[in-house]
Image 1 (tube, rainbow, N blue to C red):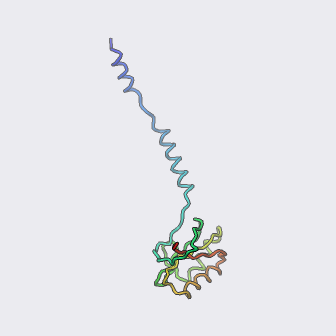
Image 2: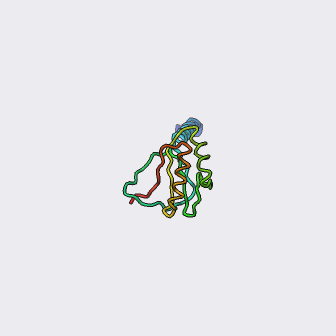
Length: 135
């Protein structure tokens, strides 16, 4: 006859933990976090922004354009130039209209900045902001 300790050891060996429900929960949480995350499309270049005392944080769902100190205009890591601003923003604003934030380097000439803003207005963008660093 077997002792009670041997029977308990045999019963413990026969029991397995079913991990399928745990994996289901983990995947559902992963999908939830992916869907609810607000994705911001970065410009892909670093610019040295001018400082301002009145700097404020804007909402996350904006279009971001960057103007480098060498005069290049970037959207999503691609150099679109001043001539590509209007076409790019027209295509983006067809689905939904969002504010535009221009990340201009502090050494960018005013004339170039005005040209980019003008092209954005011609594309139908109503809210145009310039990114600054808080002083």
